[in-house]
Image (spheres, rainbow, N blue to C red):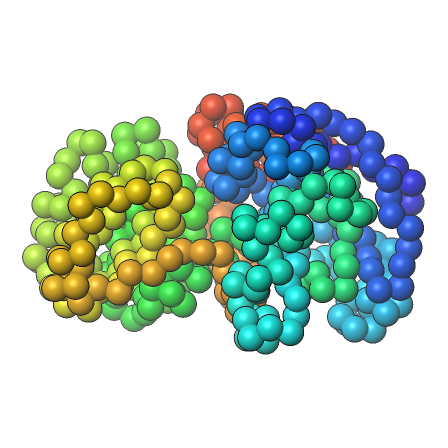
Length: 370
C-alpha cells in the first residue's frame, strides 16, 4: 500500500483542495477502509458553505468500501477481515452509554460534533485530529475500534450500497419514527434523495397510499417518485396541495407526514398539520432551516392530537434493514443514481446536490479511484 493518499479537503467556505495525506501506520486495534463510494448528502451542501471551525477537513460521511490493513485486535473484536465490503456509519460512539447500548448512536454525546468541536464524526472532523483521515472524499479512511461497520450483502454492488445512508434515513423516519405500516396514508414532502427513500420505505412497509409534494423544478424527481411507489404527486406551485390531498383521501387526511424539505421554510410544516387526519397523526420533520417559527399553530397541533418528531439520523436497525432492502432489488434505485464524480470534482459534486452544478442530480456519489 502507498504511504501517501489523495484526499479532497474543504479548506474554506465552498472551497476544496486536492492534497496528499499520510497513510497511518498499521495498528492492532485499527483498520483502513479503501473507499469505493462516498455519497454526497444534502447536509454536505449546507456544511460546505460554512466557514471552517478550525483546520481543513475531509468531508464525506456516506461511505462504502473494502477493508484493508485490518489489525489483529480489530479483527477479533469486530469479526471483520481484509477484503470485506462494508458500509461505514458516520458516528464514532462511546460504546457504553444508554444510547449506544440500544444501537441509537445518533444520540451518543461522543458524536455531538455540532456542540463539541473535539467530537469525532466522519465527514466533519479536522485533519488536526490524528490521523486526519476522517472523511470519505479520500482514497482511504481510518477506522478505530469503535467504528460502526455493516457487512454489505453478497450481490449488492458498492455503487448500489452507496444509497445505504438515505435509505436508512427513509426507513428510520417513515417506518420506525413515523409508524408507517399496512394501509397507512403517507404524505412525503420533498422528492429529494431522502424523500424518495421515504417513499420506498413506506411502500415496502405496506402503505396504502403515498402522496408526494414538490415544486415545479422537481418535475423529473416527481416522475422518479411515481416509479418508486408514489400513488399521487402534487406540484404545490401549480395546484392547491391541501385541496388535492383532501380529494385523494376523501377528506380524511393523512396518517403520517414526513417533511424532507429542509430549508424550505415553515410552509411545509403548516401544510402537514392541515393535511393530518382529525386525530392521532404523526409528523416527522427534518428541521434544518427551522431555527425560527413565529406563530406556530400549537393549538391545532394539540387539538388534532398530532405527534411531532424530529428526523435526525438513523439507528443500527435502520441500516441493516436498508441494506436488506437495497439487496432485494425490489425498487429501480438506479433512477436515483444520477451522477458520479472523481476526487478532483468534489466541489462540483457537492454543488450538484445543491442545484448549482450538474443538472438533474438526485443521488450523487464520489468515486475516489476514478
